Structure formats: C-alpha cells, structure tokens
Amino acid sequence: MSSSTAGLDMISVDPRRVADLQENLAEVQARVDKAANGRPVTLVAVSKYMPPSDLQLLYSSPHRQLHFGENYLQELLHKSSLLPADIHWHFQGALQTNKCKNLASQIRNLWSVETVDTVKKADALEKGRRSVLEGKGEVGEEGKKWARLRVYVQVNTSGEESKSGVEPPEAHALCRHIHNSCPSLTLSGLMTIGSRSNSLSSSEENPDFKTLVSVRDQISKELGVELGLSMGMSSDFEEAIRMGSTNVRVGSLLFGKRKTKEEMDELKKRTAETEKAR
Ligand SMILES: *Cc1c(COP(=O)(O)O)cnc(C)c1O
Image (cartoon, rainbow, N blue to C red):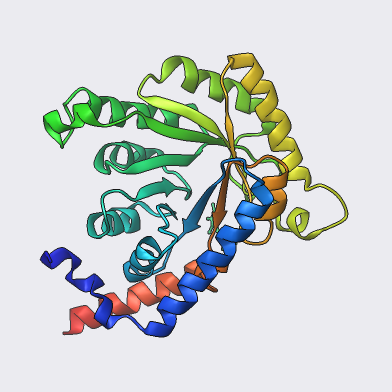
C-alpha cells in the first residue's frame, strides 16, 4: 500500500460505521431503484465534510458506490488525491470564477460540474479544460486523453435571493452559449436546489421540480439535444425521480447528520491552531 492511502486502512475504521454506511446505502439505492422503475438514475453520494474513510467504505461496499458529490475545491482536491481513480466526482458547491480553471484542469476523474450559472464561469471552465485537451495543461501530453467536462446549468427555480443559479428565462442563453461556444464542455442538463418549504409541503407536485422540467423541455427542444435533470436531495429524491430527475444528490440519509459550515470552519481553525502550537 502506498503511503498516501495508508490513512484509509480499514483497521482504523469503527465496525459500526461500516455497518451503518452499508445499510444506509443499500436502503437508499433500493428506494432510488423503486422510484426509477427501470429508468437509469444516478445516485450521487454527497460527501462534503465526511472523512475519506467514509467514502472508501461506500466505494468498497457490495453496492460499490462510484458517484460522489463535493462542494469545496480544496476538499475535492484532497479527497481525489487519496481515493481510487475510478471514482466519478461531481462538483456541486458554489462556483467561483477564479477557481474554475483549476477545477477543470486538475482532476482527471471529475465527472461533472453542476453549478454553472454565468457565461464567465462557463468560459473559465472551457479555458481550463481546453488547455488540458490540447496537451498544454499541467498534466502535459497525458491531457489529450481526458474527456470533455460535463456541466449542468444551475437554475434558481424558487426565486429565493439566497440561492445561486440563473433565473429560469436566462437559462436558455447560457445553455446555448455552452452548447455552441464551449467545445471542451458537454452540456449535461439543468440543476436546482429548490426551496426547503417547497420540498416539505406535500400538497402537490414540487413547484421547483416542475419549473426545472419545463425549462429543460424547452431548451432541449430548442437545441435539439437530450438534457438531464439534477434534482432531489435526502428529503425529496423519490418525488424528484418520479418527476423525471436523472441525477439525485443524497447526503445526510447516507452519512448521517453533518456539521454546519460554521461548525466546520471553527473546527478547521482550532485544528490549525493546535498544529501551530505543537
Ligand atoms: C449538501 C448538498 C446536498 C445534500 O443534501 P442532503 O439534504 O444532506 O441530502 C445536495 N445538493 C447540494 C448542492 C448540496 O450542497
């Protein structure tokens, strides 16, 4: 075993954690399969803040989880350097234009970027991936064997100011731009996070999902391409699948409750201070 994977040695892993994670995955995958009713739907295990050992466990479990979603570039770079090269990484966090180039050019097994919401970010991803495909990136000639990068356009379907994403009517122009002017990217579809209240009210079909389906149908027709839908999380993935989702993002149902961003930042700060004091 190389030194970089030594930290993932199973001996250090709590056997109860192994059982819990395997059980959670079996249950969620069964629920996905039932809702999908034979249609292909990708289950993305959203692993932000979770230790690499948890991801390794799901990857090596009988269900062999291959798709993982991460929200932060540093965390993704760290985990992708430790974990198996055939994992399919999804970037699902808030995207910053100045990080797009690195994101597109440093991780060979980055499967998709699901949070593209401006032409600038699309262009920056295009630039990063194009340099790799032309053999001019950090990975050199090797880059010519990389694939085009899949991207989803994030749509703000709920109109909440706190949510990123383009307004539904603006999604057309951004999708057209990616489709026509970004040859190193592949437009995979549309993504929404949706509002919490829309997800929790059980009265009728989730209006966020309805909006995303309708915008996708229009754009798909306009561009003449098949487009997927990244929608549905722990609280609503079955409904999302029934409404046509092709990519569900499930975190807490698989890994258990996670720390908030504030708690994580505090933890990192304290760890850094302890290391400095040593
Ligand atoms: C964290 C996160 C999820 C997972 O949410 P859960 O409710 O824990 O399933 C899904 N999508 C995005 C974009 C996220 O940031």
